Image (cartoon, rainbow, N blue to C red; front, side, top):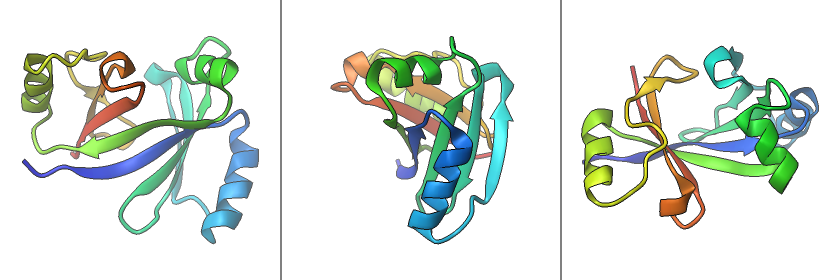
Length: 133
């Protein structure tokens, strides 16, 4: 089954400031900026020729990203693998003993389908599964 790293999610305190920093670092502006209401997060996406950088700002103090930044500080929040069949991948991982946050896929920022694997079962790393639309 073909899997590839789709993006690295970086939690930030202030999206506008982080966009300035990463635009300078990467030598280009973000390709897109979106708000994902059901996840309560603002996202800026940078194309880096194969693996995107996704800057994440919590939409409110009680959002998951804001709580992450408050407890751990800004930094890498998750990494994302693209998978061809997300339901099959969820089933495979659950059968292998991994703890899923999402047992059923939901819609991601790009309209694809996503599900998260709990960091308790991955050595502390939040893993996002992504099936492109």
